[in-house]
Image (cartoon, rainbow, N blue to C red; front, side, top):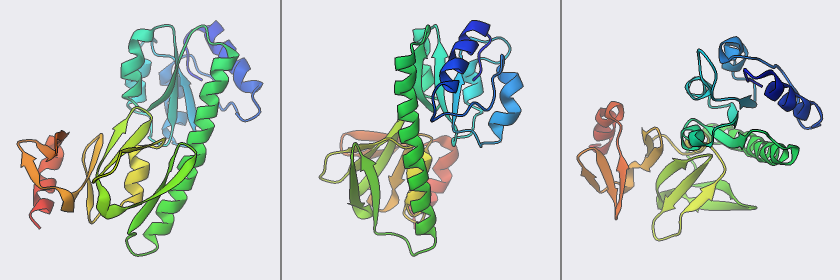
Length: 233
């Protein structure tokens, strides 16, 4: 828990301590004080204020490892969009009720469970030949999909959207890194911080973007040379 307001910090601390599924590893009044423990990447969730002196929550969030998810706790709803762009799992407005806190914790537990499952799948795939199918959780179902039907994957807030040929997109509560680890690197490439594409299914490249029907997938400048090289193979 990181918050420069003593009362807000104490409230969330109390909530954490009365919730059996959580273990409080630290309580800090500034992001600077918490940098060392958070950057170790061993913490699953950080409850983080946004409006703090020296290093605010949004800036600090860009430094936090992707294995740690963020639940923002703030008095300002104007930061919501920025918050979800920096790996935020949820966004709680002060004063936070215990019921809203528990809802966020439930989402965090679901994310942790799926994250562990995807890590296990990725490790299994790395020990075998490249998979022809992958399995992801969509709502309460496990869905298998053929790799050669996946055109591209987009990260949106706390989930990924898988876009497939001649099928409806599928949404799953996971990070782009987690699905990237499941996809074979010889055919899939992250071309932007929010997009992964299936190289063999790329047909049209227009300036700095890939065209899939009526949709445009941006190509980051630092990925352009590698992408064009792989496209030419």
